[in-house]
Amino acid sequence: MSFDLWLAFAAASTALLMIPGPTVLLVLSYALTQGKRVAVASALGVATGDLVAMTLSIIGLGAIIATSATAFTIVKYAGALYLLYLGIKMLRSERSDGLGDLSNSDHAEAWTVFRHTATVTALNPKSNTFFIAFVPQFISTEAAFAPQAGILIATFVVIAGVNALMFALAANAMRVRISKPSVLQWMTRAGGATLIAMAAFTATLRRAN
Image (cartoon, rainbow, N blue to C red; front, top):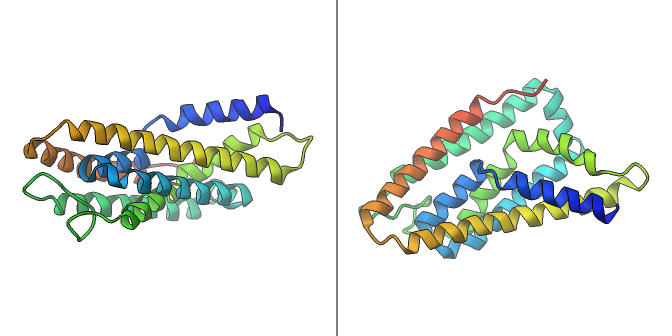
């Protein structure tokens, strides 16, 4: 793989990842309600989810989802239900001091944040079909497939993780400047409502023909 081709892939991936989706919204919700301590966990969760989705897409799952209405529907509703679950849990866990969380404890543990972000990322059906359509454009037919696929997967996963970390740190910086409990309480409600809205949106996704 030439450096120019790799650079084009990295630039395209960065531009695409900057567009907020369910994963970014979940990361922002965690950062706004939990603070800086979950930033790394959320970024690692995103990277892991993308690693799973991209790897499975490249080895064939993405092609199956793209061509099978049943497989696409199963993944779609699984992702939508999980987002709905997280949104409702955030709304129900809201506390009077304005800080909400997505766990049963006073603060979400790093493992909980990692697990939630990884699951939401991996269960996004559009990610699977997107990878199967996007990645081949940067694969050279003059070189072995596996090494190129490995490079592209590693590149995308690193960029996705860094992107999520930047969003989380930016949201945390905003949170630090907001001290009013009522404002933080509103953010928790908005975060939960947004996740529920993204669940509804995910449930309406249609498979590309």
